Amino acid sequence: MAENVKIVYEGKTYEFPIIVGSEGEKGIDISKLRQITGLITLDPGYANTGSCTSSITFMDGEKGILRYRGIPVEQLAEHSSFIETAYLLINGRLPTREELDHVSALFNDNSLVHEDMQIFYQNFPRGSHPMGILSSMVNALRSFYPELQTIEEEINITVIRLLSKVRTMAAMSYRISRGHKVVYPRPDLKYCANFLNMMFDTPVKPYQVDDILEKALNVFWILHADHEQNCSTSAVRLVGSGRVNLYAAISAGIAALWGPLHGGANQAVIEMLTDIQKDGGNYMRAVARAKDKKDPFRLMGFGHRVYKAYDPRARIMKKMCHRILDKLSFDDPLLDLAKELEEVALKDDYFIDHNLYPNVDFYSGIVLRAMGIPTNMFTVMFAIGRFPGWIAQWKECSDDPNWRLGRPRQIYIGPEKKQYIPIDQR
Ligand code: ACO
Image 1 (cartoon, helix red, strand yellow):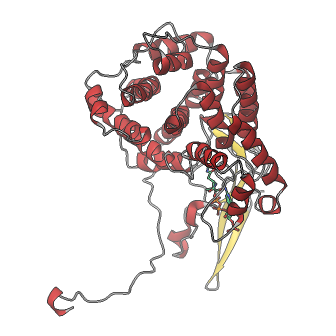
Image 2 (tube, rainbow, N blue to C red; image 1 turned 45 degrees about the horizontal axis):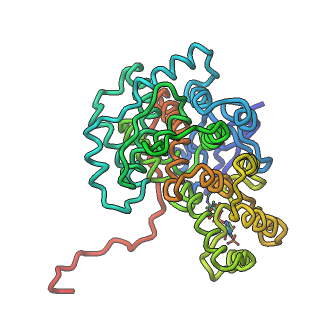
Image 3 (spheres, rainbow, N blue to C red; image 1 turned 135 degrees about the vertical axis):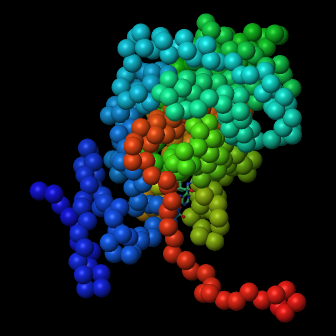
């Protein structure tokens, strides 16, 4: 029997339907609330607000579950590639071998970046953050490829372009920032190997893609590929709801991801661990500061809006750290520090009471360091991985004939009506 929720307001009872998701999650459908009661809801940070129904990603924060289109992320990290996972997210099902080969061929055809774009890259001031550059350049793609996105085929090619070019653009920004010549994509290399080669190949020392690093990058990007209605994805949906082009919507997602409370946390974690190292490895001081309410310091890479258990991505990332470092016989003191910090925090009452566990960003920086990725590129790495999710979420909206303009309300608490006073009478 359909359930309802009753709201009693000014002596009248109003009923609102309960909507039940495929995994049993329940929510009150209040889409008619204002129309019939005159009320709105107030939910800062949207912690209790479902902004949409979606069939892309399921996560259960209490149980530490994450699935893309129903498939546990652990299985994808073990067996899939980033491109196959991207296909799954965007198209709703795993590809056949022919479909995957076709997509790979399209990626090769669309991997080059317009030569005129290099002028932009070269004119960003030295020291510009790569996230700012990436966001601007993705937005600029629209000027280079101004087709309308009303036809399905055009949307599909825009999606391919974005996914393929983003790795070229990211590698270009790194090379140019170092004053090095740009390395072009190679059709004989797969997606992740191609990216590593564009980053690190030099005429002096040709880059040999190591299998373990290629696998690690696939896993890293799979783990970042989608995470339902987080800050940057909500930005993509909201900005997209104005029917802006896909490039602009993704560019908004990149900008949102940049912040240290969101994707920028992977850079912030390494900076925090480095500071602790400089402080003689005194991680107890960091734990004490994180607990001190008068100190704005937070343990970066800890805590999550939805996960109130161990983030399943962090568990896989931690294992990957060990695999890479063992295989490369690379000893990273920051990994030891991170493990000690985690151990202390997980036993500490403050962290237990607040349900604070390591999130995906806690160990991901150590994986990226082992690959040779510079710290200021970490959030760009996250962004590349999140492209399939942003695209899938945008597509879900644009396929919905009832996609409404995103436009929250507010409770105004400013001054009541008053008269304008001319400047010489103030
Ligand atoms: N260190 C210390 N205390 C913390 C931390 C932390 N990392 N995270 C949350 N808390 C505390 C808060 O101080 C607050 O305490 P109080 O209730 O006693 O005042 C309580 O836990 C709840 O914190 P909120 O900020 O309200 O929780 P919210 O769900 O809004 O925040 C967030 C989630 C932003 C991720 C937070 O945990 C944080 O700042 N973490 C550090 C940054 C980080 O790692 N971000 C990456 C998140 S994953 C991602 O976006 C990819």
